[in-house]
Image (cartoon, rainbow over all chains, first blue to last red; front, side, top):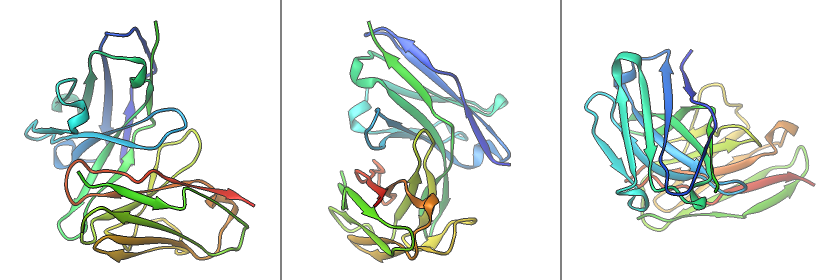
Length: 122
Length: 107
């Protein structure tokens, strides 16, 4: 079945970087974009950006420009999201999701990874 | 950036009730609107895409409508497993923004 499996929880100090992985299986990895979304505790969903696994092209929300880098390794069907200069405001669950697309309907996120909790604390 | 506004932010209802959640975009997004359901501690799950298309495996009591700037998610007869938080998301243009969520609680 189509599945995204993310790496485990991380604890980082302010100013550090974190890199979260997202292993895809059950479909052709290079066919669909991967999006990243985060959710602070008790808060809503915040879209961070997208990556095309075939070309490596990316697009980031303005809020994260300069701090986020989305990459991939096609040989192991894994996408990565690295966030730098962490502050306590970055404490959240980070999700990867496949962007299933159709020209007529746009695209939607399905499935999602299980989420990775990143805690930023001194 | 396109702003997505859901109403209400929270809603109490009983099993068997019909519930409507609305989502408004700050500019026209045609029908590039998705709805997700999220339960505590779980990743979101898509219910509706393209404003009104039901994702495979989602019960038919869920339906979506609207176009342009105004959209609805309707649950025709609430089941106990439907108590969750619901989010709309536009896929018209990046950043693919979400609404703030609607928390559906048991009355």
